[in-house]
Image 1: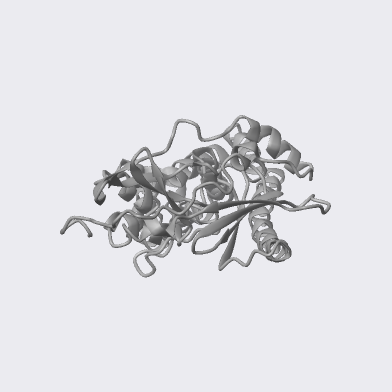
Image 2: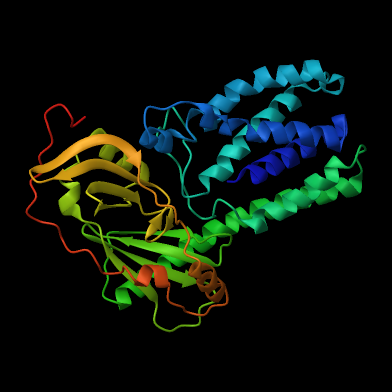
Length: 363
C-alpha cells in the first residue's frame, strides 16, 4: 500500500494499544514510524531492475523477522519512554503488530509480499485491493489526525479509534469476499462467450472495490474482462490479447525470465518492442501500459541474444481517457476502454526466428 496508509495504520494500531500509557499523540507518532520501517528495503541495492522488482517486499516484510525485531525495538522504546517500563510485553506486541500489519495489507495488493519468508519464499498477493484505496485509508487517517492533536486518552476517543480499525479491517475482508464473487461471475461470463481460460484472477481496479479487472489466462492468449458490481447485464467488456509463447520458448531457460515467471505466477506476456524481447507482468497496470515491463533479449537475424535486464516501461502509464472510462464503470455503465480496444487482438504469432542464445547465458 502507499506510504500514507502504512503510516496511519501503524499509528492507529500503536495508539489503540499504547495510547493510555503514553497519550494518543506520542503513541501515534511511534506507530507511524514503526509502520513505515519495512519499506526501508527500497534502500537495498540490487544487481538489476528485475531483482529490485521481485525482491522488494522481501525479508523486511516477513512476520518471522518482525517477531525477532519486536523485542529489540521494543526495548529501545522502553528505555526511551518511562511510561512503558511496566508493560514490556504490551510494548513488544505493539511493535510486532505495527510491523506485521504493514506486511499484511501489502499482501492484500496484487504486488504481493514475502510474508512467511524464509519458510515459504513465494510472495503472497491477494489482489483484492488497489495499492491506493481511499475508503480503506480515510477512517484511519481521520482518527490519527485526531490523535496527533490530543494529549489525553478518553473513552470517546477510544471508541472512535476502535471503530476505525474495525471498519478498515472489515473493508479488507469484504474485498476478499467480493473478489471471489467476481471470479465466479467472470467464469460464467467467459463461458457464455466461448472462452475457457486455464485460470482466472480478479484484481481490484484503481481506488475502489466496485470495479474489477479479471484476467482469463490461456497458453497463447489472455482475456481481460472488466466487471462492475453495479452492472445490470448486457454484453461483457472483454478484450483478447496474444501472449506469444513462441517468443517465451526462446528465453524460458534464462534467469531473468524464470524470475519474472515465478513472481508473476505465470501472468505474463512476451512481445517484441523496438528489437527487444520484452516480458510484461499482466497483473499490474492497464493494457497496454503495464507498470512492470522488462527487456531481457535482443532480436537478431540469427536469433535472440540475452542482454542485461532493463526496464522497458514507457512514459505513459495511464491513458487520459481511462478516467472517463473508470467513472462510467463505477456507475455500472458498460464503456469501451479506448486504449485497450485499439490494440486488442493484434499481434500475430512470430515465427521463423531461431532461439539462439550463446552458451553460458541461460542462467
